Length: 75
Image (tube, rainbow, N blue to C red; front, side, top):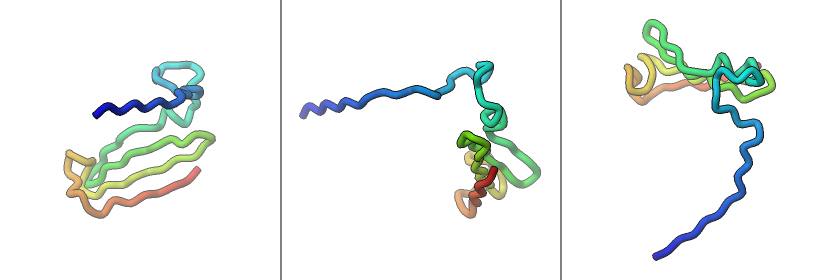
């Protein structure tokens, strides 16, 4: 069986270097954070919008039991 897929690539606005001076400030806060009994992932969506995923117990693979995560959206 042979399968062929093609898709147009559009990487405009894609950043691969965290030290890129044109990187929007929002993306400098994106990442994983760990506190006492909780982990979080901050996701920059651009234009000042963020999503935060909270994991009771810690980050996935580091304390979170796979249940009970919370999603918070905001600016």
